Image (cartoon, rainbow, N blue to C red):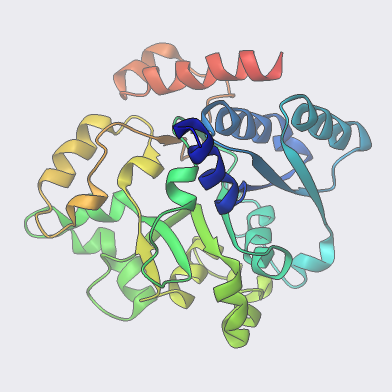
Length: 301
């Protein structure tokens, strides 16, 4: 067998890259940018799990046509209001649709990589889907903003108070950002109590950061941490390098690679919204802003 044939065989043995996104009718185009950018860098077949809430038929058809044109398998999950029974939106910038990710272990076999819709993929998702999770059911990236506060001397306790109250302890270094999650659905489902508890949308919605806080609570001590490059907050490239250097206790595996493999456009000023390029430049966000817009023009044409 040739080297190329051996590599193809190994990829097939691992199965497709399973990617999940969740959106309502307002974010379909952003979701397509996530999917398209992931496909651009994928080293093997991709299976897209699209969690759609209140989408019009034309929008569903558009997603299906895009995936078919790019050779990606599409599995569409229709999200209904019953999934959010009793849930209340606490923050206008955090949609209840994000709660749908908590149900993935009930719908999917094996591993799946969930991505928020305000992201741009710059690397091969096979790297995180195939990562060694050291027997843990979840892979995620530590929250950069928490790490940045921890590197201060002394740590900025007032800024960390929410996370400390959430965990009920001073050590909050394990708090992760839920924008990217590698879920071992079989392992989660094997813990019937855990699988049932994380599906409680009503309870999850009561937290400040909704299901992100909720998932942090339920997976506390059961997370394998992935490199910071796989959840790189836009406009923070230089600060990230300085912050990680100032955290000698952080494993080197989480500091490499240095370059972003995925950009996360956190905050209300999303790249598809109108905003001043000068302001973006001053905040260090212009390169990331232009990267998203170039990708969107190509993917959505």
